[in-house]
Amino acid sequence: MSKRPASERIQDFREVDQGLSAEEAVAEAARCLQCKKPKCVEGCPVTIDIPGFLADVAAGNFREAARTIKQDNMLPAICGRVCPQETQCEGVCILGIKDKPVSIGSLERFVADWEYDHGVELPEVAPSTGKRVAVVGSGPAGLTAAAELARAGHSVTIFESLHEAGGVLTYGIPSFRLPKDVVAREIEQVLALGVDLKLNHLVGRSVSVDELLAFDAVVLGTGAGLPYFMGIEGDNLNGVYSANEYLTRVNLMHADRFPDFDTPVVRASRVAVVGAGNVAMDAARVARRLGARVFLIYRRREEDFPARAAEIENAKEEGIEFLTCANPVRILGGPTVTGIECVRMEMCEPDQSGRPTPRPIEGSTFSLDVDAVIEAIGQGPNPLLIHLIPGLAIGRKGNVEVDGEGKTSLSGVYAAGDVATGAATVIWAMGAAKQAAQRAARAIDRMLEES
Image 1 (cartoon, rainbow, N blue to C red):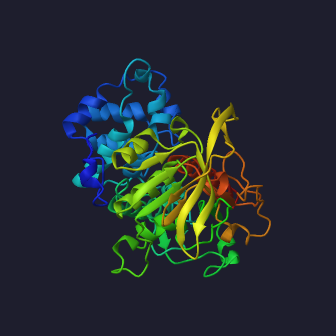
Image 2: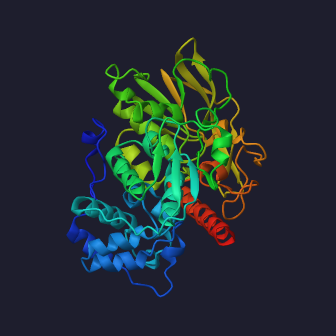
Image 3: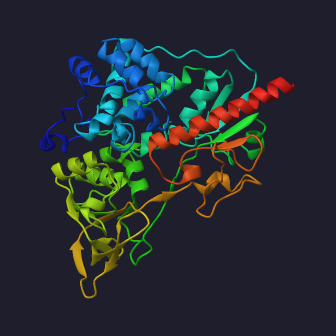
């Protein structure tokens, strides 16, 4: 896909990637070899019939391609934009051995956008079972579970604690990577299946746990909203943010438009972002658009960055300055941030992930003058709800313990996405939610047969 020039796009929050034309989509889809045993489907966490929809696109039958995708994925415009296809469906494409893999993600996005422009069709919904299912959280896991259960004929209610639906899709991923109107239109399609969305409903507070457990089944999809901090001196200074808070203020609460909105964010001139995952790249690119010079600090080498290659490239083009093999040891200032002190790192033997283990180099400390620090070093499951439910087994890392299909320790209660696995990708949350919803649906079917 073509993308907007960096000099232009750092001035606003409009989408960077420009998508495919119909002619480009047909030509790209025609490259698919239609393998008898398609590895791309195995590489997709929601198991879309990829060869099927690619054949439809290659034939110019975009309507049928949309129908094919929606049999397994009700959020194709979102997934086509933010899924790490290079490590999933495209990563196992046979063409990638000697050439470039088929651009499956770009084609999924094209089909979803084409359908929106030419009239949306909804998948068939089964007759009503009369059974009620509560879904807690309206992020990718919650939306996927709700769609699966609604299509099975169950009455689904989503409880969302915030004033807008979408979870990380709305408050976490910046608009230049995932436009908010794209998120809104795909949420509307899920709701059109008959799903009831209740905003500003915090389970355990405005909705009691007893009310929740009165449903025939419950799916927890509350995500990973608990940010991790480095735990170093200066963590509590004004101007230190978790990436979660920083992105929420800008994406959901429009702090980039302060003072028009009453949720400000530091308009720093020099920002340090700690971390090198996709969230770190998002935070750095947002700070750049708000006018800052941005330093991205990571304790390993650039080739060890966990972020997607495309996002690393975009960040470089937009002027983000990478400081690799460096690790913060102290945030300077008081009461506000004035700098960050780091130590140089050397790479030692590989750890279990295959990446080298970093070790501080004695006497190598240095300081950067910055007036804001954004910590993007990971986050864990949101503890607000899960600790209120008696008998719910909680894992060592604060996650809800589930079996291979999303069932928790409580009968009729399932969990999916980051609340069960810890922070992961959107599509992995959706895949887990699909499994959990299908198991919940089967359990409800058994209840109906027994009644």
